[in-house]
Image 1 (cartoon, rainbow, N blue to C red):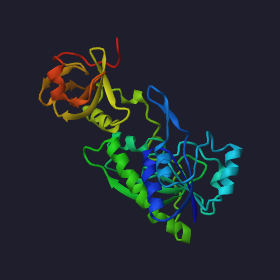
Image 2 (cartoon, one colour; image 1 turned 30 degrees about the vertical axis):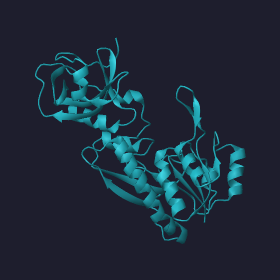
Image 3 (cartoon, rainbow, N blue to C red; image 1 turned 90 degrees about the vertical axis):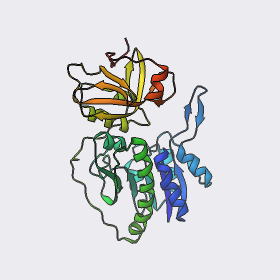
Image 4 (cartoon, helix red, strand yellow; image 1 turned 180 degrees about the vertical axis):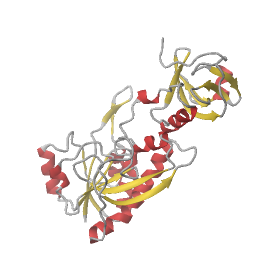
Length: 315
């Protein structure tokens, strides 16, 4: 069976590696164009391109997969199946209809929950107890195709967006290898999704979404800190400088009359910040231009006083 693989970020690397290891014939890999990175604007390959090159698989990087020239290239490859994982472009109907066994997608949520671009971070931010991976047959809607298989992953209490990302990438890889034979031999079951998802659409994460609004419950903010770790990170402003927050815990106490965002305590446990409900204790931080460090170490080199207010903007 000839497989064409479409994927771009780190999440899509383990499934590609698993296909090769399982002995499938991956005839080509389609990934996003190389992007300039860093000050020198050096063009860097996508993680999936790097993996494909390790296995000497032909790589295509079309600006748009719907371009007629590229559609023709794909037709000539004559794939029996197209496997898609976090590719980053909408795939047109003429490509979806091309392979004998269809296009299947590895989606990092338990569909129909968390359709969209950022299901992993959103599950952590929302305080979900479990997440997982769904393999579905792709249709024209966004993550609305028929479901073929699922695998459930339980979230730990200190789960971050990054740790869940890594776990689901590996889960997706093993689920893919378990699922392909049933598609090939005709024993796979295809379950229609309800039209409405029980959760809002998990839109792409932006840097602004990491801004801590201390008028909210500290429990909500602690989950935001974990969901935004490692990218783009939760943050606030201390004395007109950006302060990234990498780790925080909730203190089950009220802050009296202190306004939300007020630092109500500074000790070895961290920086205690008044919230709409309860107190958020910042335990690992990174001040603009400085290294990421535990708050205890940070406080040895930077004076933070009770009564200082963390703000939502620079003056």
